[in-house]
Image (cartoon, rainbow, N blue to C red):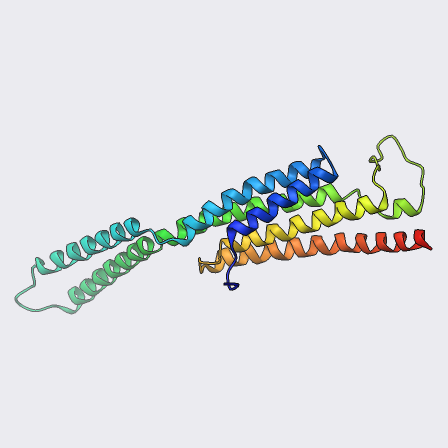
Length: 235
């Protein structure tokens, strides 16, 4: 029961997070990013299901083509005219070389056809994972200017300084929402390799999880500073 990710529950969790953000920060940019994450989550649910299922029609076509190719090769060999006087050394070498070239070409064509399904799934998975990676960077951009030290040290703002309207408790919630969204991005990425054992896609998912973990670590460092500030205010 708890040995695999449930895509439906991930989507529901993201939907709940969107409502929480909208209720606390109405019409915020972070809320729009979360709604985009919810849209991607719905798409991820469909894409991961497509990647996980076997494509029987494609496999049947692949095997039919392989059988036709093998049958054609056998027919060519069967209809070949063999010399009655036996093979000369030069002719034997040339014949073996031609047979080896045909075998290599047939093997390459067979390998290409057998891996068509995997390559199709990999291409679709990598494209979706790239979208999640880009969204993680967008979330990081939203928390970039949320500097807790500005609450402790009142520096002179310039015309280009970012607006700082959030108090410490609100800033904690804002950063916490960013961290939750990053965590959910990692879960969405993991959906693509849950039932698709491909090393290339798995490596891409690991990169996304490392990225989101690293970004969350930076966010939690800010949250820890804010907790210290809040504790100082209570003293």
